[in-house]
Image 1 (cartoon, rainbow, N blue to C red):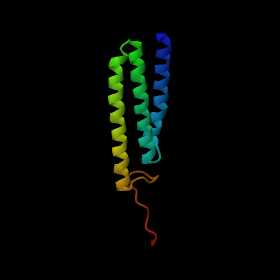
Image 2: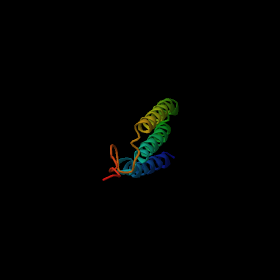
Image 3: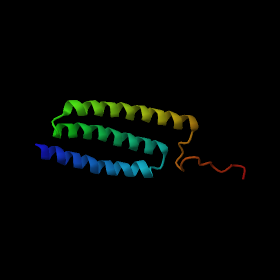
Length: 102
């Protein structure tokens, strides 16, 4: 049964690598925030799987819940920051569109 959980953990790590590509090369800030949020969610699940493998679910579930809460708070804070600074354009952070009267 442990081999099933180890295989599931490896599959989750491979999926996290695909999501890491979106978090790094995302065309907008929203794509990057969502990529990091998905990685945090998969890490939470991975912590529970590790707890199941070591037969210490009670300890790892506390760590996973704390990590999930921290992930949620950071995602909300980053979303509000980018919403207030209006840097959500597809050209990247700080890009200014050329003036129309040129």
